[in-house]
Length: 214
Image (cartoon, rainbow, N blue to C red):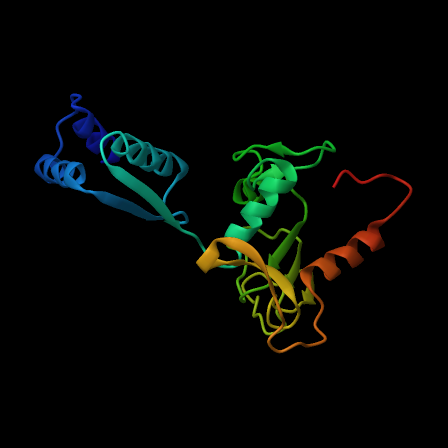
């Protein structure tokens, strides 16, 4: 549908579609827009669809003003993306097994790695809500979640209770109004450890004379 809409706006031929008239009407409205915004959910669309939508926004900017606004998922996903970008130069799905960052959306896709049996253990982190892994199989899992999380569907091999950023402990989080990372003081500070502290203790327990790749 997006490809047909882009073709219509560009005056290129397109294949026959059942919704051709609706696409034609939408193309007329988009051309007439003085300032339009395309909204989409990054979690609900696949990579190629998002790429096509961004291409449509770019096309429209040739004759009018148009912008895109992805509705980011929760759990500080946008903040993780920004941190990954400035630390490695790549977005998420970046591996470090060879001692340097490598970005490959297919090779480092978690569900595929679990389904193919390429991984023998997973570290699951859900600090903002009681979310459980949605992959299939009996992969040994170390879970870092809130103490009240109910992971009964696939109980983890190890469950470490951690605090919620900005609630149990101070944190740096993405501040939506300014689209930047900002310091957040704990609203109800507790003794629950942070994700960083838990991972740090795991790393110390694994420390040996052999240098670990990641």
